[in-house]
Length: 352
Image (cartoon, rainbow, N blue to C red):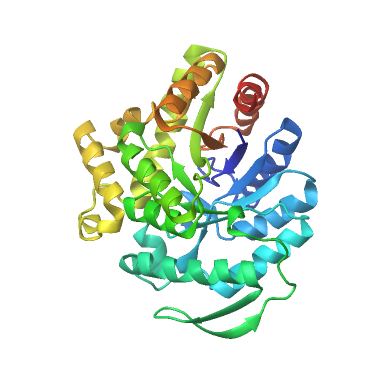
């Protein structure tokens, strides 16, 4: 099993952005010394919810400070980025890091961010599918061209040329039935965020694996789960930190994506967010709904996390993890405390 860290860049600390951004990024550098396999970074814009406008640029800095950890934008949001530039930046980082890039791609889900980029959430499915095809072709052939509905690109050669960059090193965020289907069709590894009871995701996971097998004649690779982690030896500290910091980040997630908003009901490809809104409403609002999502993430003592992993693996099969230790304004001293404990007591078992 591969285990990484996921940098969410959620600034609820009340510290200046410049200091926050440096401290959050440092987590990826420390992760290599602790034995993590991936350093992953989000792309989000404009708010405290998550402020990392260019994960490829962040990971270029991380690449210069590390030697072995794999570098994963998780993810580049394709409707907000020019496909040619995504190819060029991914290739440059791959060369500078000596082949460590794993390119994560997503389509976004927050209206506020689409509005900031002068685009419409309703167009994201078409834009992503078209852009992903362009990007995959560019990475595999070294040439980028397009004549589609959303992207017009005369044929150009990518320089520096890509080297051995196949779609085996590409990942797609797959949080809806349509996204899981597209990931399988394109032959990509799937990335899912922990959002409550995993039994709700089983139909999509099974469809992804069966479609992948049918189209490509081989088993689908293990998918990646992005988990929020609470990991302390003391059970009361686990409870206290979950109630304080996990609840704070969940509230930010709910507000950012507008769980329960009627606009998702008119967008079939975002059906997952309709379900999340209904569950949140049934729980009595975002202030209380976070407790329904604790079970979906890895929250507990090291021993409890291992048992949760075994139960989840029995349910969903093989998977990999990118773990988010920093969220909700948790002090960085505590971020590193739980990160080190996880690396020392949980990760060896996961990898073993």
